[in-house]
Length: 119
Image 1 (tube, rainbow, N blue to C red):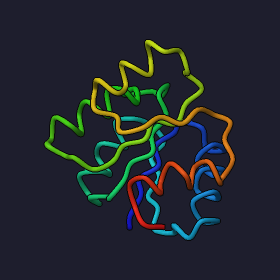
Image 2: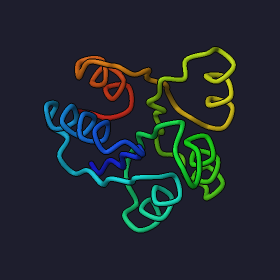
Image 3: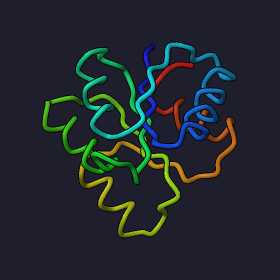
Image 4: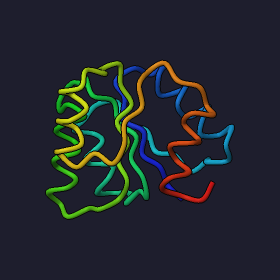
């Protein structure tokens, strides 16, 4: 299973990737902004996307809209500090599969992933 991790914070990408590795998910592609996420999605065809909301070039919400516009139905999980109900609703309406607020524990990420994949 290939996972695309999109976050403009290199530290946060490392935290997410370390969490993924701790649960056995090692095939990971990293994107530093929304536009790069879409380009890497087209290039690598991941099975799941973990994206931040606030990123340069394209927001996570725009990434979700773009990927859904391409016809992709893969799980997309928004990982962000944005936790207001209207933002969660906007993400779900755009096609986001699930939502995870920062900070998070690796076990909580695993619970989210278990809904969509076999870890």
